[in-house]
Length: 115
Ligand code: FES
Image (cartoon, rainbow, N blue to C red; front, side, top):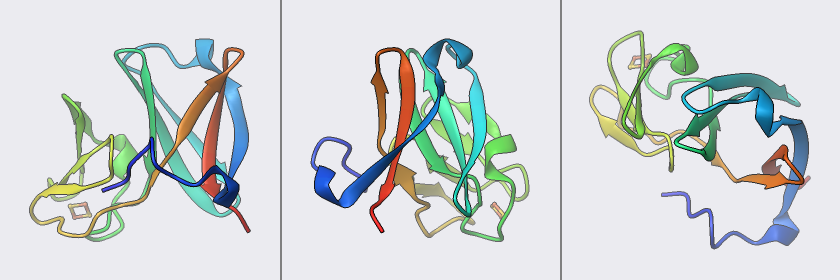
């Protein structure tokens, strides 16, 4: 499970995304960082970022329904914890990437592994 509070910042590069005001509570934002499709969520004022590709059969995960802290894949109903990327419902069994998110001076940044 991804731990947002225990990653090594020297191994992460943060990309500037957008003003946090453009992502209100309950909304999601689709971005590509390099070749990685990522979806960012605002859940009750907390921001989370996960890969936008389902690990089961590459479904468009970010288009799924959010239920609490989970997202349900629209293709076959696999479910993932948005906070960690952990697969929590069959047929999904492989976790998806979760990325650290920071808000600095009102701007959202998403961290990816440093090159
Ligand atoms: S592609 Fe997502 S559950 Fe099958």
